[in-house]
Length: 126
Image (cartoon, rainbow, N blue to C red; front, side, top):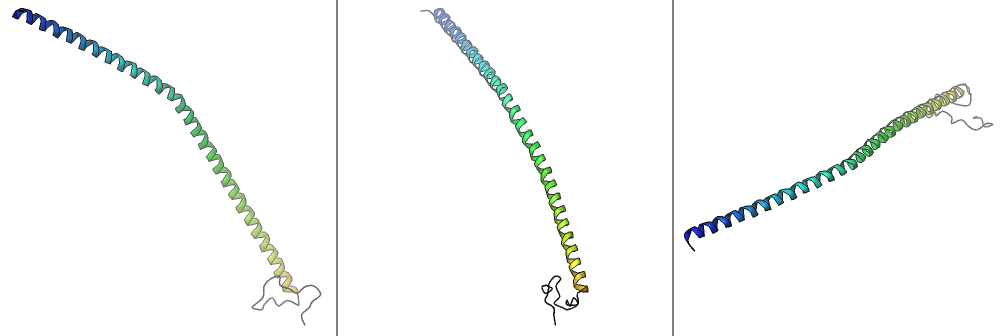
């Protein structure tokens, strides 16, 4: 084979390799496009799940706020009941003190005096 033949053969081989390389490159680009499209489709499917979980989180937040408000109301009601109890107890003790003050058998001025510690009825101090 002559030099010209070798050159032509080399040019043909280089052209064939370039065509094969171009085809392989196009195939990889096609695969990459397909893979990207699949990933975007999966992301779109996940968007629905994301919306659902966001909705659930928002609902849970609303329920927590409602529970917090109810707890505050219950705490206020308990404090109100406690105040009513303390007021009732104070009124009862005041009434006992008044009764002890007029009872001749009770020394309401002594150091050890405690309201309501009167002797049972029928028992009088001598």
